[in-house]
Length: 138
Image (cartoon, rainbow, N blue to C red; front, side):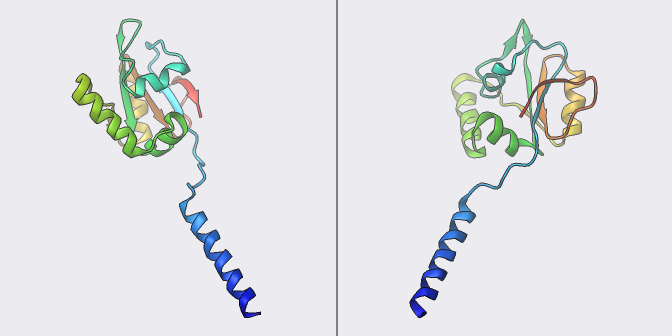
């Protein structure tokens, strides 16, 4: 009986350790939005956010990061963790002289900037209002 209780405790500890290292389930949707002047396809999103695409049809792309939704965006869209994303942009800055996406604080800030700035692209975790061009929903 004592041995069986020991095994149960051991299995419980293993299960709790496994749960602790698994990522939390993702609940929020991510909407990639862009200014109506921008001509991009959903396939371009990764290229824009990794610095491989800076122009679209002669228009300079102005990418935005959203502080409030960055974790969701990185995991769902780019399949990167924040450390890897920061490292990527540090290398691009030094090697290629590129500037990382501007960071906005909230979904509302991103929406306002994208609506009023030609070439702007960003992402939000709440459904954007009518009139905002949604490039893709994740």
